[in-house]
Amino acid sequence: MGDELQRRYLDAMGIQRWVARSSRAACPIGETTVRAEAETADQPDASEWDSLQAEVIACTRCELHKTRTQTVFGTGNRQADWLIVGEAPGADEDREGEPFVGRAGELLNEMLFATGHRREQVYIANILKCRPPGNRNPQSHEISCCVDYLWRQIRMVQPKIILAVGGIAANSLLQTDARVGELRGKVHYVAEQAVVVTYHPAYLLRSPLEKRKVWDDLQFARKVYRGVAH
Image 1 (spheres, rainbow, N blue to C red):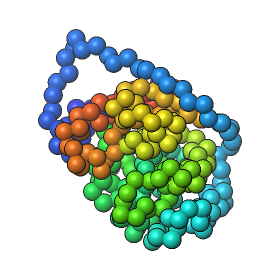
Image 2 (image 1 turned 135 degrees about the horizontal axis):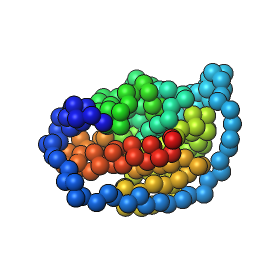
Image 3 (image 1 turned 120 degrees about the horizontal axis):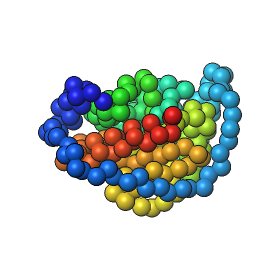
């Protein structure tokens, strides 16, 4: 990332600029492997995406279908190298039918900018496709009912890297109960895709001082991506 792009990102995130010291040692890349069934397939056509989306729209697997305004399937480039995974739709997403809108969505856009991407260049989806009432955390049985849709999206997109934002997204993907702080700064693998974990934009809105850590996470993710993409 050029100096000007870095400056714009840091300004947007409200982070004071700093100069890295040349003597600073590079952070080692840790690795955790999660067993998951991987499927190799050709790029799906539009009809396969339409079929999956129709299945999500009609889903009644859990009680959340009774309180949703609409399902939130996913958005973006269906052949993207980067796939962003959040936890569940909020009120804005439930109303508009698109993941990560509102203030959290604006902050996610700035986070993506730090990776050198615009929103339309990546694919964005959630663990849950329906909003939990009152924006409460997803319950385990709701995740169990819904996460298969996300796995199918992952197999269809075939991303080079998955950025899991927030603990629920990370725990659901990696089958762990570790906290985000324990999962950051490491490369995890699931269904043969590299996964990097960082904080959720909504958390950053409540805890802006953590934005410095996210900056490090995003630069780490760029480093990982360059390694797996070339």
